[in-house]
Image (cartoon, rainbow, N blue to C red; front, top):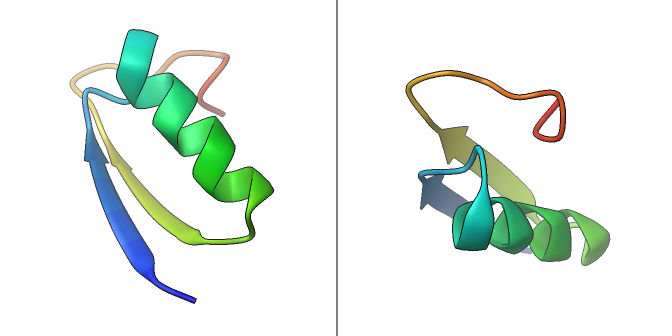
Length: 40
C-alpha cells in the first residue's frame, strides 16, 4: 500500500483521484484551500 498526496482535492480531477485511491484502500493526503462536502 502506498501513500498519495493529491493537491486541488476539492473538485474535478483531484477529487476523482481521491475517490479512486480510497476505493483501492490507499492512504490519501488531500490538500486544498477550502474543504468541500464531497471531500469529507
